[in-house]
Structure formats: C-alpha cells, structure tokens
Amino acid sequence: MNPEETGKAYDQITHLWDRKAFNRKDGIDQHKRAIAFSENKGKALDVGCGCTGRFIDLLQSEGFSPEGIDISERMIHLSKACHPEVTFHHQDICEWEIQGEYDFITAWDSIWHVPLDQQERVLQKLISSLNPGGVLIFSFGGTYKQDEHKNDHMGPELYYSTLGTNGFVKLLIGLGCILRHLEYDQYPELHTYLIVQKPRYWAVRKVV
Image (cartoon, rainbow, N blue to C red; front, side, top):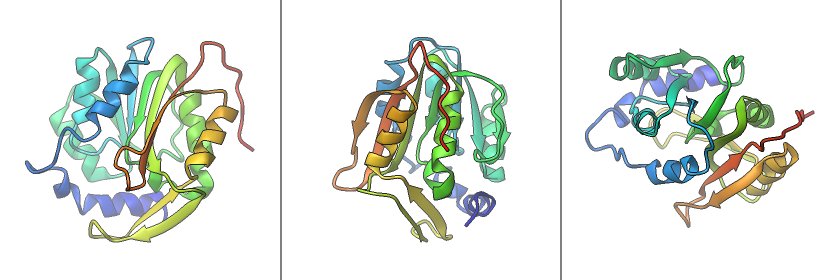
C-alpha cells in the first residue's frame, strides 16, 4: 500500500476526527513535554497534521509559527478552513523536498504509515530539517523488532510499519541526536513516542 493510497483512505474517514466526540487532548501533554526541550520558538512543522488543528493551536499558543503537511487532500482542505492563516502542504512526506528549517517538528500517529523501506530516510529528512537545538516528537509502534502489517480497524484498509523501539533508538543515536524522552504512553498497548533533539553542533550523517 503506497502513501497515495493511504491518503485516499484517510479522505474517507475524516469524520472520525471532525466530530465533537473526538478527544482533542490526545497527545497534548506529550507535546508540551517536547516543547519544554525546545531552545527556540520559530517555525514548526506538523507532519500528518490531519484536520483537528489541535497541535497547530498548541504550537501557536507557545509562540511557534506552524505549518502542516498531510497526504490526505480532504484533511488539508479541512485544516485550511480552520486555519486560513497557516501554510498547509498536500504532499507525501517520503517525496516532499523540505525547503525550510524548523525549531520543532511533530509527526504524531502519522509516519507509521510510511513504507518500511523508507522509514530511515524519512527520519533522516526530518532531523536534517531541524535547526540546531530543534526538537522532534513522533509516535510509532513499539515492537521488539521491525514490523509491517495492514488492518481495517478504522474502516478502509491501512498500512502500518515500524523499525521497532530498538531500531528507532539505534537510528537516532547514529544520526547524532540527543534522546530526551521515550515512553509507552498507552501501555500495555504498543503506542510509543520519542522526543529527540538536534545538538548545537551536528555533522550531517546519511543513512545508506
């Protein structure tokens, strides 16, 4: 299942987030923890921004100038309607050439849809797009080792992949990142998130 197909699947289920019953506090405390590590509050990027705008709102309230990117055309349409002053990109994060540099990047419940063979390159791209001292928070499936699967729990079939907890930690250490926080925040479920920071002095390191 490629990212374009994932975007079309999410086009069908925007109602799951665009409703009063959705918990807009989901992920907020985790993001506040990540923001506390940020050394500067300039540009921010929400990868897989969806349509709720809750992280956009949080980032704005904390003094950031956020942008959003999502593979779902419908999600982007709804986001623009709620935040016309914010720049949103209808793009595939695997292919998108990020032009700016950011002090904060979030990829909450989004890059686990990235094909397994592109996970490392997407993480490297996000780290490379951080300013020195910038912070990345992202969630993933905290399995013991690499895994990929499909399910239709939300309606249409969706693809998921993960490098596993040790895989992500090894990759990020190899990229020269400072690991600030790792948590299985819905234990015993495998939903896991990492907060990492780009050091002030960072040599470019490529995944081959």
